Length: 88
Image (tube, rainbow, N blue to C red):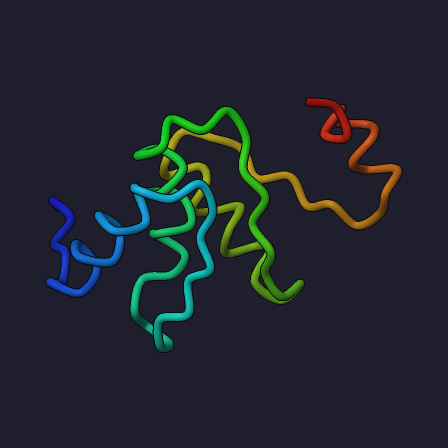
């Protein structure tokens, strides 16, 4: 099924594409999980930090698979160093 975007999603993502960082605060059901993966693709980012409630980690891992990528939960500084995310 093709994705259908709402006007505000297209407008907001287009504006966000002009920036190097993004804080997204759409209402519940507004597509935040989708945008969390779409925006880095638009920006051609090599890596992205998504800050989400721990309860949402499984949802983000599932959505990452839909986008053909991997979401790694960082539960400590050691996790960050293990994945070499503390390096440029």
